Length: 142
Ligand SMILES: [Fe+2]
Ligand SMILES: [Fe+2]
View 1: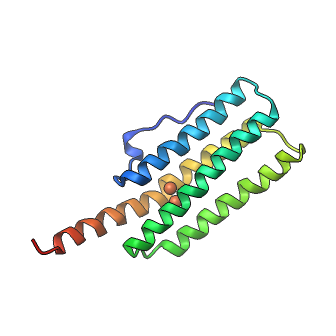
View 2: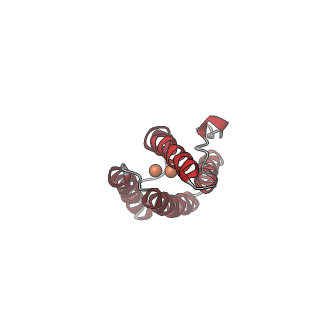
């Protein structure tokens, strides 16, 4: 499974969020590299846990920023975050119980999980956030 290559087009123009997105991609790439090195299941499970922790922290930060900016899509976006975490946490449970291992389809799913949300809901938020911030700057008395 190939690594995700970070491209400028993935930047939302929101420094904290962009930094967290790059970190999430890094966590995914570390898991994929460990899979290619055929690391033990326990190692892969640990790396998946790191990715999930990173995602949970990021989702909280993104939702806090949405709240701060009064983003109208917050509830829907929060639901999508919750659903994403739930799906991968369910997989993490069967992995920890030794009933599953990390496989190529799992990595493909995770890559889709990260990039699909990023290019869809996150990109929509990025656009709206840049507009809200620009409007607030214009409205500010000089
Ligand atoms: Fe998001
Ligand atoms: Fe995000």
